[in-house]
Image 1 (cartoon, rainbow, N blue to C red):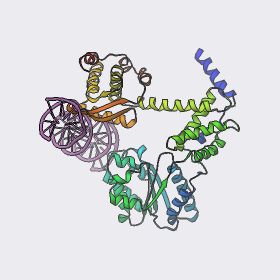
Image 2: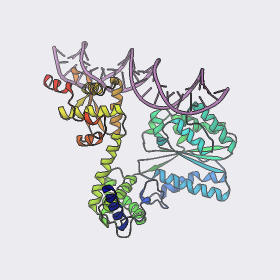
Image 3: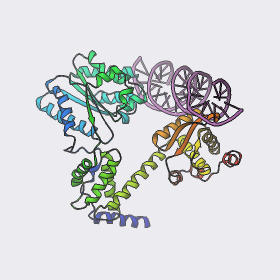
Image 4: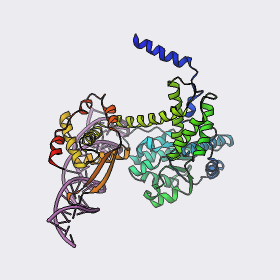
Length: 416
DNA sequence: CGTCCACAGGAATGACGGGCGG
DNA sequence: CCGCCCGTCATTCCTGTGGACG
């Protein structure tokens, strides 16, 4: 009953205040705006390269790269959408298929997505890669068309496994009789070129388009344009807008981050019942985003990764800032037995640590201690309070936060 | 200046669950 | 339903190594 009245209050307040937003969907990053400011050059280039398709010729493969939030995906989708409309207009049999490789996860699922793109049903799993590829080829040839394949975040499948799929795709035209394929590879890692098989690279990057990060002024323009659609008139102060742009520019010029920041700022303002967004709201939004990102990452770890985090947590608490592999494994095994979980091998834990490092939750550095061996020095990139917050409401892990590992109290007096 | 610690991290192999084709 | 193949996680075994110590 009390709950009900609380909610009534919340809902009423929400409903009765005007709020700062006009249309907050505009700020989501999957929203594709009509205009893409400061990307005119890239749009033109991409358009020029794929234009031959309208006359029934295959276009060059394109390699698109730039950091996250520089508009690669938006520009590509924008141009492809326009192309499809134009193709329909002139009656060219063209279609495109956009796949995000990181979201797909594996080569198999990328291929499965491609099959779906040409309306070919394939099972989730079970078939060999080669089998799916053959089906894809056959289905495509039957369709008699030119297909543009956009592989977003293509580095994800190459770094994780190999470039076999990409290699096969670049060669697919040799075996197609009635259809043609062009590939747009999108990567946010410039070093990808070093990993790639030279044959794949030369074939894939017949054309290249580079996306530079936005600077603060450009970000500001982008935000301003989007804010006009998203916020009520006058609900967003100039200062708040500039601050969003400046904060995002300082960190890689990432437009996606800038838009997130703007949206969360608005939400913060709204929750506080303010009628306009101030710089203070932006600063709070920045903290909130960072905080949630980490909590989210921690919550989504597997059990053993969480246990490794907890082990580091305990070591840091007892010894100060450093922890090394051997110590971590010692604490980890003790925690495991405490939970009656069988521990993983040290080898496995070592790769878990590397994964946590890649996630930015830990920082692992290989150091040599000379006579005393070679190991990894591990620091936490997360505050201890955050660990507590993330794990304390987990029924199994909660009690381990205040647990005092035996090996720590014993060792502390023994060594160093 | 060689030794040797305490691991790093690669390769091969196994266990397992999901999902196919027959 | 069975046998088969797949991807993923984990183990086992292994070779490699920076640099303080003697």
